[in-house]
Image 1 (cartoon, rainbow, N blue to C red):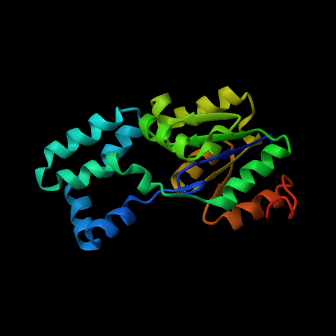
Image 2 (cartoon, rainbow, N blue to C red):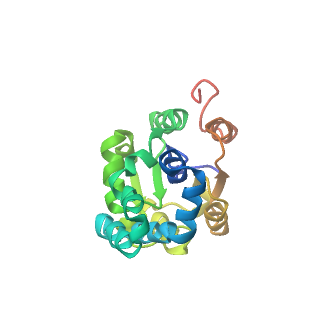
Length: 206
């Protein structure tokens, strides 16, 4: 089936996002494990992905756990150190697809405040033809609604979409709707997928 648009997740596909690595460097692995066991940081982050206000959500949680106040506040104050580098080969693939005239879309679980930070730090995030960011939409992957919103906005049949994401459950939800999916592990494997699909040449995908 002909692919008419390519859909990128952002975190760990285009930008490395690893809060655990940040905390390991700051407080050590053992303390980081206690922090993540005792404080619902990822649950709070899901709230951000649904559109909760960035600083109030983080600081309210910090107030609930006085033993970890400083560490929790880093989720706001040091967030760009969680997302500390772009995945350069993936960015080149995004730009190569755009240069071919193929619509390139984003579908990402991302908070409003965090996305604004990322957009300033990584200007290539403004290069998508359309961006479907969960915080603005109020729904997250792998819920059906966010995929439906993209389908409606793109105006394309589901089987004309090729989607790269690093989380199996997000790919499974897309494929259940008829999308073509690629579980992202490395940019080299993603490049090979795009070449196999006839969207890029070997030279394009370097």
